[in-house]
Image 1 (cartoon, rainbow, N blue to C red):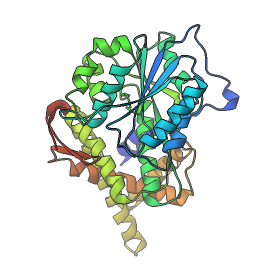
Image 2 (spheres, rainbow, N blue to C red):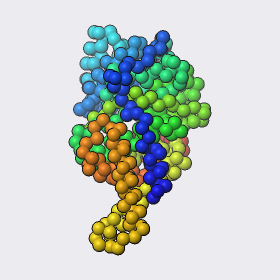
Image 3 (cartoon, rainbow, N blue to C red):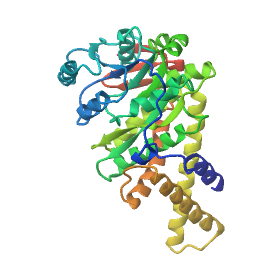
Image 4 (tube, helix red, strand yellow):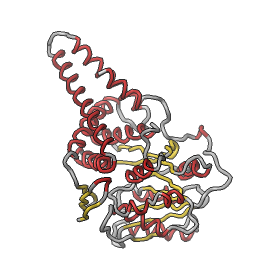
Length: 383
């Protein structure tokens, strides 16, 4: 129990940064010249936050960039919105915006297919590709913060992350927010950092040198396969805490939370099976310890005799609650602390159950498509 608490404390508690730049921090540093950026945004369907999120990408204060919206086909629900936003920007002439269609995929993930269509359509003088999702809101300086380390020559690939902003303090909404926050904190451990597809910048020269397009053209996932290529080349993504996005979430049940997390585990399983297995064993051990400690405390509360195991269980749960509350201060909208603590415990068990669901899985289902996947995330068939 002590070892589990020490490990969690080392990973999550150290006070690095909330990931949000405030007015008191002052403006982000500016290099002498900024590289030309192509911001590629795959879009599938439309949600309540889509227009706000896309407008936040349009309102970046970066000096030289273009935006490419990419949908599978012209009949996507988001196309009307994209055309309207494109017309608005054509009138203002800043930044240049284009909407392109990729067509249905036949041998890779549909998102990969969309991203590759965006790369193909990017301006010839683009120096940096930035990949973002359509469901996250960005501050006006997000793009500058993300690209600055590349501009200064300190990195060739950078990545930010995001915070889930739950509309209500329900268990599934807070649980999803805590799961993402835990991943965010892990991203800041340099030996763990990997690019996140919703918030990554990559120098075009490195994209071409690593032949990322060739890998994506046959892979089920974009970011984890990119992490695989970086590891093979002896490189790592540089985390940028200031490049933090916000993701409003108004509706979520336990089933949707579990399906989302199961997909994340599957990506890891196919591309990094060793990390998948190790993380699963650690989570299972933590879940077992929580269950055992909870049972001991219940027996003690029911009048059972005090013992060293009872005392250790109480101390373990108190320490776990302390770590959970320490995590809470890194979130911009954590909700009431009793709800938060309940969601922390639930997050451990949902993560463990989601991992168990991947043990015998060889398929990923997403957006109405079923992918049969082999080693290293290679797509075997698409249905």
